[in-house]
Structures are given as C-alpha cells and as structure tokens.
Figure 1 (cartoon, helix red, strand yellow):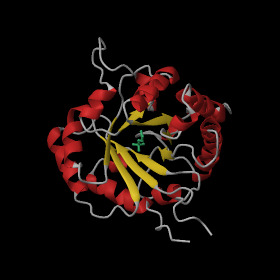
Figure 2: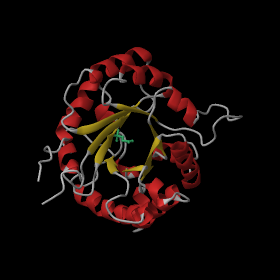
Figure 3: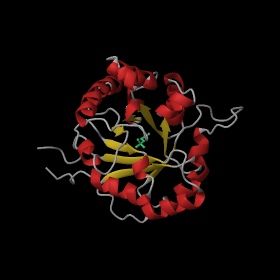
Amino acid sequence: MSDPATPAPGWPFWVGTSWKMNGLPDDARSYAERIAAVDDWHGVLPFVMPPFTVLADVARLLRDSPVQVGGQNMHWDECGSWTGEISAPMLRQCGATMVELGHSERRRHFGETDQTVNLKVHAALRHGLTPLVCIGETQAERDGGVADLILARQVRLALHGLTAAHVGRVMFAYEPVWAIGEAGRPAPPELVAQAAAGIRQELDRAAGAPGVSPPLLYGGSVNLENAAPYAALAGIDGLFVGRAAWTAEGYAALARAAARPPRRGP
Ligand code: PGA
C-alpha cells in the first residue's frame, strides 16, 4: 500500500513552454489573460517563459494563477559591467520563479557552455530561482554512438559543486538537438525512455539517492499528437514545448493532452 503523502513516481507532471523570441506586449498580455482564465489544469504544473520585455507583465497577470513564470536565460553575476545581460535578482523582481538555462539555441549561437550553465545554476539557486537546465545531443553525436556520454557530461558539469540537497532543486529538460524546431523530428518515445534512464542514473548519483533527484522533462517537437505518448513514459516528469504552445489555446490543449489520471489514495 503506498503512502498517500508520497507522490507516485512521475507525479506531479510539468507542462511548460518557452516563447523564445516571440511575444509583443499586446499578444503577451492576451496570452497571459487567456491562460489565467483556465480553471482546471488537470493536475499538471504549468509554466511559461516569455521574453524579458514582457516578463513582468505576464507574471503580474498570472500572479493569482498556478502558472509559474520564468526567464529564458540570465547572467551568473548579480550586477556589473555585462552589457545586454539580465541577472537573477532582476528576474526575481519581475516575478519570475524559474529560469531556463543552456538551451541548445544558446549553446549553438551564443557561446553557452557547460561551464557557464554551471555558474548560472549556482546563481539561480542563490537567488531562489528554479533552474531548468536543457541538455541534448546533436545528430552527429547520436550517430557516433556518444549520445549517452554527452548527456552524462552535460548533467555532471551543470551540477558541479552543488550539495546533494541543492541537486533536488534543479530541473532538467532532455531535448535532442535534432528534435527541436522547424527542421526537427520528434524523437521516438523508446529512444526518449532509453536516454531518460541514463540521465536518471546521473541525477540519482548526484542527488545521493534515488527518488529525490530532479524532475526530467522532454522537449523537441512536442505537439498534440505525441504529447500523451511522451507523458506516458515512466522516466519523464513533464514536457517542455516550443511552437505547439505559442498560442494560449494550443498550450492549454497540450496540458490537457499530457495530464495523467488523478492519483488515487492507497
Ligand atoms: P519546439 O521547441 O517544440 O518548437 O521543437 C522545443 C524547445 O526548443 O524547447
């Protein structure tokens, strides 16, 4: 008989979206108002990550809703001569509770490395933000048979220097680089399950015990058709969505599609 106070494996289930570089103020407000009006999230934990320019507005509109708000990146320092950057205290002041770190677009186009992700993870935790660290292998790395090594390395370096207790306050998203965006192909669920098992081993090792390690989300061409099969995978604790959630209706529909049956008592 299971203890009702102990969440069932894989529960709760996160469904979040990054708007990437989309969302002018009017559109952002209308999106936020629509999802603020959703009265039943079917047990999922929702979060949105809008661009910095609308973050405070979106956070204000969602303040009384269960939807958490996060930034899509930040700097590791608190303030100083870092032209064009945003700090953790700035995100907090805007109402963010989460921050996405290490997305493959930032790694590829803006020089993000495992080392800078690690600095940012420490800074986020120091300032009370939940870091959502994105990891994923390229097609060449998968073809070359080193996907698991790459994922393990990304996890280890992201968590470097954290105590076991702090490890449990980080979230991860497995996002194969080849599955993301217009040119992406959704990853087969079996492949996601296999990669997630390897990632979980690394997370458990860092957390010092199984069952307390970070939530692991899947992202990359998630849509209404494949949301439920991904959500059914035992090793996956949530979905992180781009394009399919760029309308409020699309996002709410995805959350419904990914919702797992309510947990029953013992
Ligand atoms: P996509 O983006 O859903 O548009 O493929 C996912 C991501 O980049 O997190």
